[in-house]
Structures are given as structure tokens and as C-alpha cells.
Length: 212
Image (cartoon, rainbow, N blue to C red):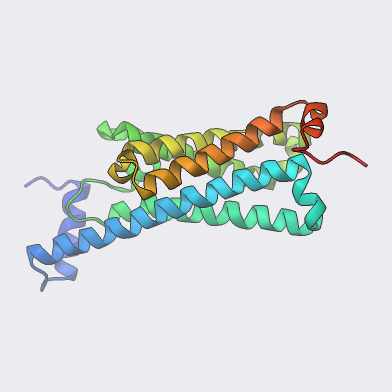
């Protein structure tokens, strides 16, 4: 039997847990999938909140209710937590014993015949991480260029939505999870449309605060 990275991983796992039977491995993999699935949904939900909160902040609503420091801290906490759960979602699959899914598959999209839905999710997570890390070099980039980079967060969320819909049978069936996923996406789309409306139109429709 050739020694592939997957074979080595499986052998190492078997040596570390010699008492487990095939049924135990199946339960172990099922537990991993449950963790990955929960982390994925939490990441998507928190990313939607991050996007929505960011747009409402740019429109001036959040500024009327809380201080600037509180706004910045809340936005950062939401974004970092979303990315943390997204990373956990992808990394979890590496620990499955019944799937040939290694670290390279979790990092590089579409590698080794990877599924399109998985690749799109990886690209979305990579974009989100890039946006988050860009704050470190914000001064070097300058605010204008950094702000342009920040717009990639919309692309990250869109890819996350596509990944969630393509990879989740529960979402495709439009059950409770499906309604929740589509509802969050619709809410983000609504506030985005309100964001791009001309300022005078938004104020006239009373969906944005007037400048004082």
C-alpha cells in the first residue's frame, strides 16, 4: 500500500487509538462533521451580522446610539469571531479518518480535484482573512486604498452564501436553516441597497439620519 499523506494520517490515528472499531471511527467522523457544520453556520451568521453592522455604521445609524470606540470594537469582535468559526469549519475536516482531505485541501481552493462548493468557501474565507489582516497595514496602504480592500468583505460574504447553499442539503431544502440563511442574506442585501442610495433619497425616505 503506497504511503500517501492520507494513509500516514489514518495509520497514525489508528496507532494512537487502537481500541476503536469501525463503528467507533464512523461515530468519530460524524462528531467531526457536526462540529464543522455548527462552526460553518455560526461563521455565516456572524459574517452576516458583521456586514449588516458595518453598513448601518456607515449609514450613521449606529453612531447615533453608541460611541465610536464601541462601534469599532463591536465590528472587530464580530468579524474576528466569524473568521475564527470559519477557520474551525475548514480545519475540522482534516481530522476525519474516512475522507482524503488534508491541510492543503483546507487552504488551497480547487486543489487535487476539490469540489467547487468547497473551493468557493475557501476563497471566501481567504478574502475575509485578507480584509481582516489589511488593518495591520492600513497606515501603509492609506485610508482610501484600505477602504477599497475593505469592499472585498462583500465578496467574501457572497461566496460564503454560495458555499453554504451548495454544500448544505438542509439549506437547499429550504427548511428552517434554509430560511435563516436566505433571510440573513436578504437583510444584508437590503441594507446594502439602502447604503448605495443617494444620501438625499435615503434621508427623504427616512431610512438614513439627516446630517446635523
